[in-house]
Image 1 (cartoon, one colour):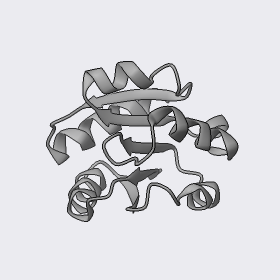
Image 2: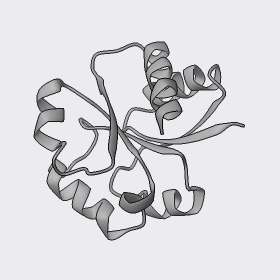
Image 3: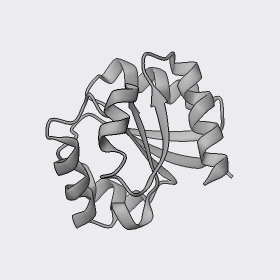
Image 4: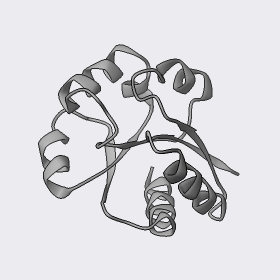
Length: 122
């Protein structure tokens, strides 16, 4: 069975690299470059996980996770965040569904490996 993840990142090139890496792991990756306008897509697709690069979000992490809580995302979709250890420590209390953290910098292939491992635990 092919798993699906939804990737939010402003950089199109990064999205393409990660999408290719995940495809080798039998994971479909849908990307979106607008971190402020994605809720409706996730609610329609219902992916196994939402992957968010913390450097991509324009609002504070607290506000971002509050906006997730307003939709169906927070109650149903596990979150995987990319960022430094410091960024992760500052947001983990705000994101109750955070199931994984990937430290940057990291290669796209390594991201594919780590997301695959996290999805197996979900």
